[in-house]
Image (cartoon, rainbow, N blue to C red):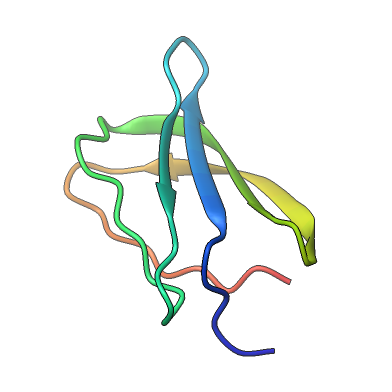
Amino acid sequence: MGPVEGALVTLTPGDGVAHSALSDRNGFFQIGGIRPGTYSLEIRHLAHAPSAESHTFADGEAINLNPR
């Protein structure tokens, strides 16, 4: 499967407000202003099964995702 446009990517910290972004036609997205800590990461798109996992972010960390 190639890049997915229009996927909703949501990061939710254990104690607060979710941060979301939509993927572009190349499957890229960016969510800024994330503090270090553990987040629930969810990816949703109408044509695909939802994906969910937990991720702990370090200060200044960037990640690449390949959900299955």
